[in-house]
Amino acid sequence: MSMRWYVRVAEEVNISISDIHYVSSQPWPFPSNLMLGFRASYASGDIIIQEDELAHADFFDLSNLPKIPPKGSIARELIDQIAKEQGILL
Image (cartoon, rainbow, N blue to C red; front, side, top):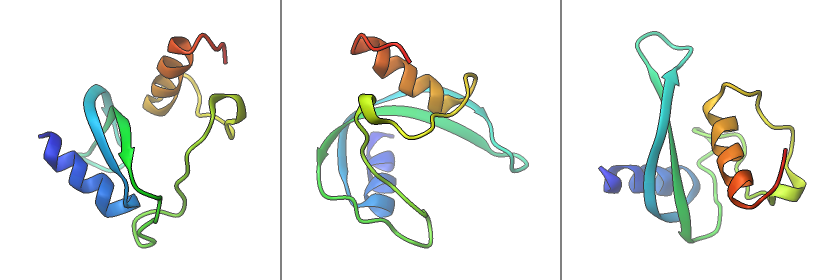
């Protein structure tokens, strides 16, 4: 399963990751779909997006985040986990 997620990340943003861990899932706004949240460590590569898949991708420092998603979303849960580990209150 790890290799499958590695391939998907490399396909869409051209970076390599390691230490992939499932965090949670939630319903996706498309019928019969599920959003999955994973954490991983950056391994290598420069972000080059596949434009027919993504509009934007970037790395952000916790002290300089763009507007963050609301509580209750997987994206916010992932951000909150990392902030807590770093001792940062958002």
